[in-house]
Length: 125
Image (cartoon, rainbow, N blue to C red; front, side, top):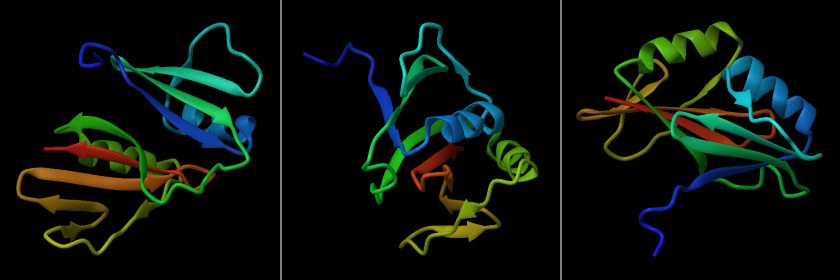
């Protein structure tokens, strides 16, 4: 029923203006035209990221959105660090930490948080 439908990453924020500075200024996403108050939709590759105002922002303790960046992971991490982004370090079974990148065989991942504490990840190979 849903296998051929696109999914949207949906991220709750407390302050849409602060979120826009992060998602647009730091991550480089561009808002889609025709936004409603309290909601911003971004095109990201072939997917969408919907950021919306919510009193429950930042309460998710798991990853809210993941970007596949392929072999550019180290470059993306360095570029975001140059913009002031701090990366999270987790002690997870089977993962080795090398700087800000966690590695398990060929899979590499880096985690960061938006201004509301939503966990975002970058996955590479």
